[in-house]
Length: 253
Ligand SMILES: Cc1cc2nc3c(=O)[nH]c(=O)nc-3n(C[C@H](O)[C@H](O)[C@H](O)COP(=O)(O)OP(=O)(O)OC[C@H]3O[C@@H](n4cnc5c(N)ncnc54)[C@H](O)[C@@H]3O)c2cc1C
Image 1 (cartoon, rainbow, N blue to C red):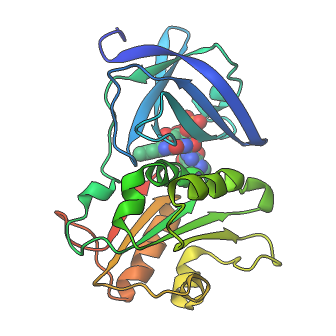
Image 2 (cartoon, rainbow, N blue to C red):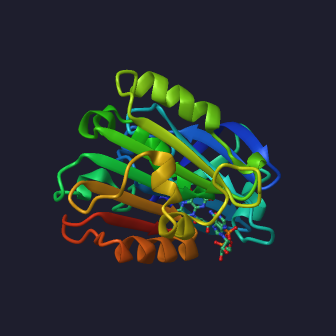
Image 3 (cartoon, helix red, strand yellow):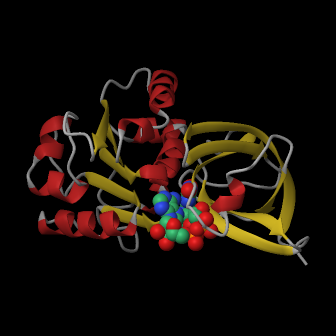
């Protein structure tokens, strides 16, 4: 039943960040081509039934393996099982990738400043984009804004530094902006829509959003995506439709 749409891949590594966050890598079949920002559909077989969920690719389109960043939802049909994943386990991978949260969707305005705004595991597609040289070639400035609840949930920070060093070596204008919403001592600790409304995000970035130059991508929690989108629209920024406009979004649930 599954063989036509899926291939069976092997788990290669697992990295645990917290009790409810982990990353894993798996083999990549030669036919599986994707664009940075897209997602895969991954399946686990449970009692003869395949449970499938969407997962953004963390890895670059040029990597030999596939990497993913996952939440563990208590009682979640998929992740309550996925959390017990071990090296050499098998996972199902749908043969084709999906999704339009890719930089290719932007025609107007022309690429200049790129804002990547994530909550939690919504960081994944942005890590893929940042591991694609063309992203660094196309933009003069890149801002990666990563909102989590606690310092412990701030996964991938060392990797973000490494990515900047290896992919954006001659690109000084990269700014990583963590937001920790339950840490009163963090430089930024409010929800993203509030940080946009009160101007704090732009202040820390040292750059304003600009309707004529900004490409802004939002990914993760649907409430954050909706409220941030509205805050940006109130600033005159426009949804990207048929290639034109500033804001592109992806909701995880
Ligand atoms: C396009 C797309 C890409 C996605 N990429 C990723 C990804 O890269 N990593 C990832 O962990 N999930 C991702 N998801 C969510 C993922 O598909 C599953 O929802 C998630 O794995 C939980 O599955 P579940 O069956 O355990 O719980 P579900 O029954 O699917 O979800 C139960 C509830 O858990 C919460 N929830 C679901 N996903 C998340 C999440 N990522 N972070 C916080 N809370 C969540 C929501 O409240 C949801 O209603 C993506 C979803 C979409 C639509």
